[in-house]
Image 1 (cartoon, helix red, strand yellow):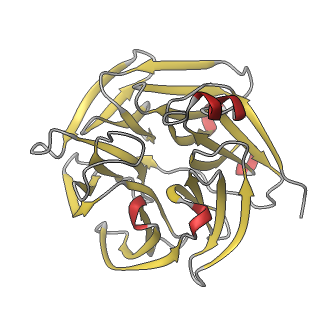
Image 2: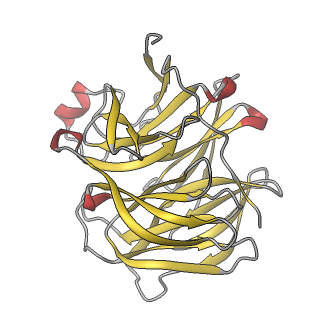
Length: 299
């Protein structure tokens, strides 16, 4: 096992950093700051950051096959032209729930953009429960609703054979699996594959590695954990110098580096003094495992 190194590569002071995505074409990392309504792109070569501000909380961002990006902004699936800093709405959900917004989202191996909603929080992880739902935006821009009664729709990814969909509804303190039909985008047979332990706190963002194991960022737990979704065992814990770790992705050369986002909202001045890197972007090297490239939205 090589020695693990954790460094804050960008002291961005995100209120709630989320949705890290590696952009291989430009050697850069995309991420969002949800309440700041910002989409950011950090160039790993120049170390420069470009930021685009939008008109509502932006909770996830993803690559788009035809160029540019897609993002979930408020309760809208949107296309983003990065050069022009322009946003086009592709679809809207939860029209009847004025207090809702999207949360985490990710593109599936067939190019559909999955994302779920939640009620807007009154404080971190404090909200009206069961208001959210899980959706996907198909390449033809039609939206499919999978289920509702969600508290905080969060991390999601697909098994390497594309037969299983993994999903986190944070306040269930569980990582769940569904049978997944790649052709139709249907999901079925929900079950729990891992229940978080007390000190791991709240499961948030998630990604899969090239060995089919899941990495889950633990909000308030200050760690990412590696799980085997087949055995239900935790294989590894990597602790970070910040408590509010929110999401993770692989990137860099050969996808051998892990990038982790975190938050500072909800921390008191004392906590911020203790954790000055809260809200920064972290890079973890030496994990000894690689990730896979993100998929791109096909519409």
